[in-house]
Image (cartoon, rainbow, N blue to C red):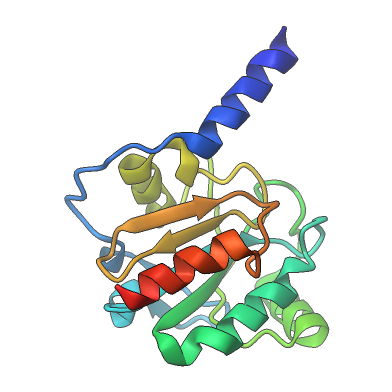
Length: 181
């Protein structure tokens, strides 16, 4: 019974969207970068922002390559990719320095990366709390490589589960639509 209930909750989370009142926008939030600088989302106004919680020891870790492809293809077309390392799913035990080295060495990552943060739980980063409050349970990462797309208006345009690759037709269709808006 529990397995069926859990499965139902997971399935509903993929299709449930709550219209938020958006008393604040994504631009009101910031992250500390993996280098210790600040990543202020307000610096990306009028751009599409893809925020992805990432981990180096996950079955979806090869998506780093797809994220780098996405970044390389669209960075000059008003798109920003931000990787958000987290150990919430126990697959990113490394330090910020180790994470940065892993990403650069194995995938040539040069898109912005944050320091390691919580994307779920009581100590969730304020951006993820905002995403949940305004978009609903579809914005809550269920696993690593969950993707949140913020449109040029600073609101969530869509979310994608871990199994959706950043180079998939469905994902790219939304990116193209948001870039043209």
